[in-house]
Image (cartoon, rainbow, N blue to C red):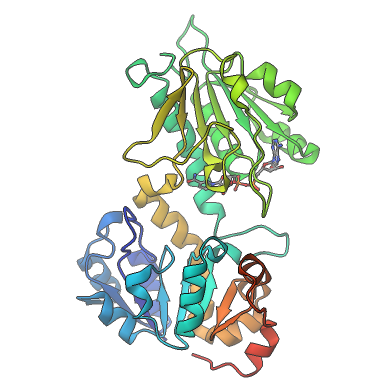
Length: 376
Ligand SMILES: NC(=O)c1ccc[n+]([C@@H]2O[C@H](COP(=O)([O-])OP(=O)(O)OC[C@H]3O[C@@H](n4cnc5c(N)ncnc54)[C@H](O)[C@@H]3O)[C@@H](O)[C@H]2O)c1
């Protein structure tokens, strides 16, 4: 298959869909790889490294879209790319269709095959192409939180791990899923005293088994949260209720009960946030202060560490990309229920119920589209 990797053009997006290592894997299976010049530069990969791995470098984004059967990207296509997308071209990337009618309608109009990273789903309902970014954000939450606890950055001026003779900081983590678990490991590793809250008792049992002794688990409820926020230095929001806005676990009135310089990192900001006073911020301007409490609410945290994020993402996407390239999307989706769930918009039809519901667009069962589909 002919596979194209364009340079991401969305503002501040430095990730790239394939590393040179990924290119080499696909070339090994006799696929032809075209990478747009400087596509990997933001993640630390040069054109020469891609060439050495077996890719051909093309000068423009038009060249890449014009030649490839499968386009591999990181972010959803944006308006300047719409016109470059061809009928039956396979696009394998994050789409998040339900958040954009414009994008959904554009992809319907282009009659492309849109396989979304975020809805590829395993039998246990886990989302293998979202997990790596949650892992990055969870670990980063502590790194950022520790930084903003420093006095010059308006924090309490406390060192996360303390020093001999001085107690460590207290870290509270709301939600013990992927983000919360990674955050807890990092905070515990730095020597902080960590508490994880979750509403799932089986999850708390698991965490209690695997976490070191400086991590304790508590059932999440309003009563406990109100007590704990009073003396915790760093609070990380990491809850998720699939398909719904995150619940406001920390309400505005609680801020007054916190100590000045407490830092809140609301990782769940991309789902509306679990802290009432949270509003999305950017890497250029990541924090703001309300009632002497520092809020960090960056909606795309992994974007700040593209070298790590690109590799984490491509480690997870490559096995799926190989299936798509080796078999063609139609056969690969017939053979793999995980990949099949990634199909959202196919040749002008919406085949994912959530997307059709979001915009009241007609839903077409996938079988109907697949039976007459063109195999690329
Ligand atoms: N800001 C970013 O850059 C970024 C990056 C990656 C992920 N995220 C977001 O982080 C959030 C967490 O993602 P995840 O992958 O860890 O999800 P996850 O599903 O693995 O974990 C969510 C956890 O929240 C728990 N939970 C639900 N309601 C709760 C409550 N009331 N109190 C305490 N716990 C509760 C669940 O039981 C679950 O264990 C999501 O909103 C995700 O979109 C943000």
